[in-house]
Length: 452
Ligand code: NDP
Figure (cartoon, rainbow, N blue to C red):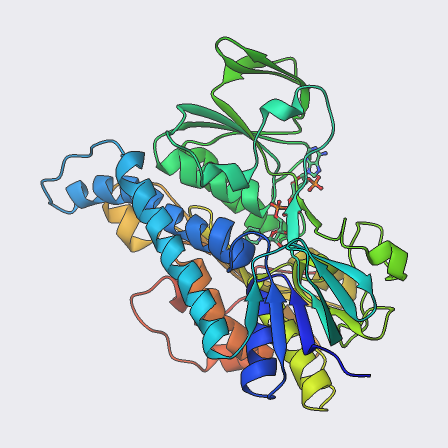
């Protein structure tokens, strides 16, 4: 049987674009890709990239204050969304074009259309065309989830923040994960009055407990009005804004209510069920170690598979798919010891096991230092940073590293290389410190804080 294409990719985000490019330019496959919205996907258009630019924008508030303490005669003004927002949009347009160029230079045919599956080798496009492919890769990502309740239609998600014409004055953020905590810090830094409700006892569930507590304290010190153990009971649109009643008896109006209560895989309406593609409980496409679904010609990578929902992981999954299918070298994407950063202020960088998870696995030593770093101490701020290593008592390997500090995302990337290589505590110890830095603590902590 002959097909129109060797590979048809549905979704032009991080995973899909990487797979399409490599299959075409390095494996010589005939490749097409369909994207219904904008090339670049969540990461470029309404996720990591615009978020990080907003992190940068929001961080100047503190820097103005510090600059005065360091002798600069600067006056802090208000942030002007009207100046920043067009530049942000222009930058995303630029990046979207680069993604288009990357695909066209690689010889990938791009359809600006929604694609659905007709059978195991046939794709229908919203433009009316029907095409066939030997292999189909689904890389449709995820979409924000909001719980169903009366009034929820008056709330927004992180997607809409990037489209704001004007900044609100007050916001309520619901949720305690990556997105909720990051936007609480960003919007607080941009001068908004920020309230955050999290239903559980501590934000950032799944991360190291001590690191979570440290981030939460710093967020509160920075001005975020964080309420844990608090959920939304009722929402109404009123003249004064969006009225919210909470589970602790409080009620008030906010200009905007932002739900950051998780994301669900984008798997509905693709025709997957009719084809017999197995879906998981969360609507995620179930795949094997090689990203193959229960229908052999159909593969899936990235957030739609709900493995580790991070851009660099989707990219690795896309590359491993091409190695496996187009180069004949079966390759499993490596999901072990994936470092990540939460871009709160200060940031949380993490790799490996939390103290709690490691202690369940084996006897451990914990090395932790919480201190006031030189730069902000001099400026008269009370902020503290945390450097923490979890070490196996038996193998001496560093099982986890958790950093809460400005630029922790940059630091953890480097610590992750050593930990991925299997570095022991003694390897860290014999590495000479870079002085004066915050991260030198990672190689100078001599005595365990505790064992478990
Ligand atoms: P998360 O899964 O991280 O957090 C969801 C939050 O919403 C949790 O605090 C959860 O509470 C809460 N929640 C869920 N359902 C409800 C509900 N019905 N009512 C109230 N609260 C609820 O999702 P995010 O949306 O923050 O992020 C999605 C994913 O995107 C992340 O997991 C991450 O993989 C990725 N991401 C990565 C970033 C980075 O690398 N810096 C940045 C942003 C996103 P509970 O803990 O009790 O379940």
